[in-house]
Length: 231
Image 1 (cartoon, rainbow, N blue to C red):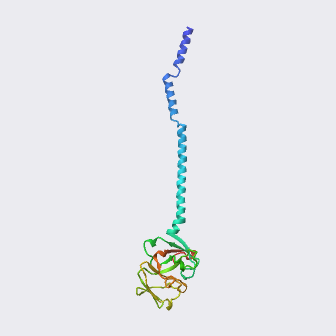
Image 2: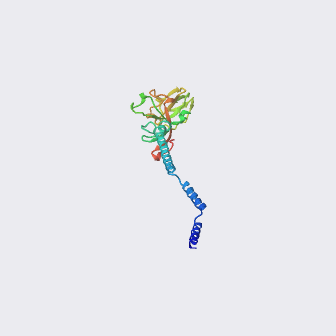
Image 3: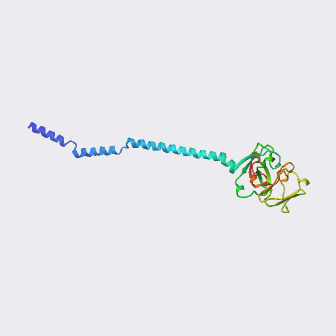
């Protein structure tokens, strides 16, 4: 009787234990939990990818900044915009020594500068005062390619018609009287300070060639009190 009771007690304990199916289900759930974890190798690969992306992005950004710096240092001043400083009295009272000008170099490739524009050009070596310097000349443009220029009695005539000339600091004299027809690649230039200007009136310089043009004055940028486009 006691043995049977003991046996029944054991059976009841087994019956009250976790069913085999539930245990198997719990085991499956545990496996599923383990399967959803990110393996160590995959985590390492993800971290490496992020590092490589950051490195490549930084390198690309650095190359872009370097290209912009080189563009600003070499391309812009040589082919687009250049700052130049006036040295000498030939353009008084419009421009004075020490003033800084911004010169644009693009439009000359597409069209000739207009009459009365202030242009910058590279004169022949024999005209330069200092042969070792890359000095440019700055003058005002009067005669365009193919035109006939005549200076008579202090007046300027283009193809027989007198033109407006209120830029001269001093009137021209009889010594300046001349007449010339420009070639298809020539321009006639004058300094506003006529008595102290080496320009197209002289045999030393004469008309300038198109390939001597450096650019057209865009703005006077210094001194700030004179900022803008001179008359």
